[in-house]
Image (tube, rainbow, N blue to C red; front, side, top):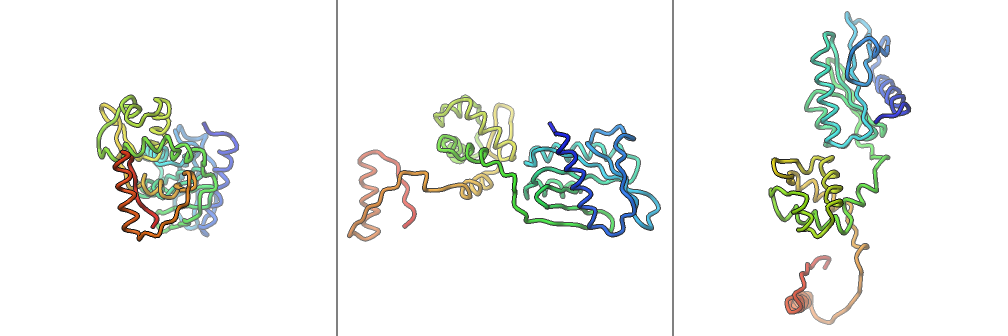
Length: 255
């Protein structure tokens, strides 16, 4: 659901993007004149142009890849139905590099409230990128990379392209159905997993791993400090031997 304030911000952002085009003669909101399924339709007249160009703008409160693809598909359907010369633009609070690629690959422009934008048609090219996400949902990331959620992520990463049902993954990761569904939805929004015939599977393991690295902190673990007069290789061998005797899985890193 979009709020009135967000639609207003979206229009203001669109006008701001147009400031990069110095031969715009006039801009009119003509949404009411068209039976369109996008949020806003603008008619723009350029200096020395024989005909105006129409901009179809779709706004969403979430710029994750799944929502971006939905918006792009919606825009493209309406572009095909438009008889006039037209161009589509997707607007969201923040558009990630992955979402930006979805737009570019479909010849759709985009803009976000962080200041990133891309408009490319005819002899017009505007691109601003690299601004970080000021609307980052920390809670989403915390839930995605929480200790319990990480059990699920490890199972997915270790199982390759295996298709999972919620119940089976819940059992394998030893977490609740509800948490599996929540993490699955979060991963689907980023298009890191896809729904299949009998379940869902991980399709972008490297993207998941990179995000995990960015959000990992060892400080969440219980840290204890020890010292030894043994060399590194001897310490490693002693730790491994002890782990094998006590049937504990270990990983050595940070030396």
